[in-house]
Length: 169
Image 1 (spheres, rainbow, N blue to C red):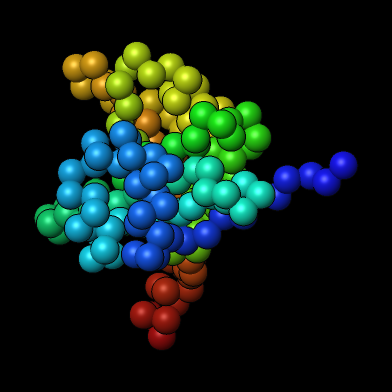
Image 2: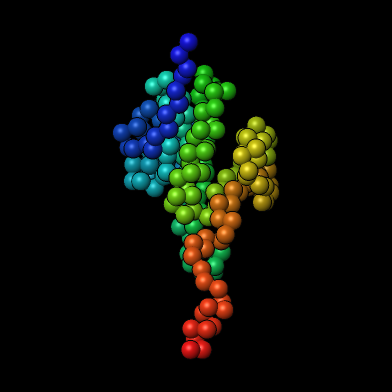
């Protein structure tokens, strides 16, 4: 028996029609999705299961004004992970999320945030199983975060002692 193959791809504007067919009712909930997607303001991954579009992930890098250290740390906001009902329980959502996290680490994003309705326990549990932590509760929504910078983004550093020796020489 041949096993089904999951392929994750970055979406391009030509995929818009297929994305809308796959997740229409959820895509419509994202303000200005069509225009912003075409203009490259959304990061979208698609999941193909046996060559059929079965899932979509939509995220948005929000640019904040720089007025404190907290606001210059690069974050991305996950708007949607959707898997068509016909294809659920095939690890498609997990593959989408894992690919997304890997790409965000490569892009040196510090944190991924998502806001979900408190009543959406399946989604909350899925994200918590994938290391997201609840950071806030606002009215009937829960904000979850996945911190990707365990080292606060420090790529290379020298010890203070070395710097002091250079200054004193």
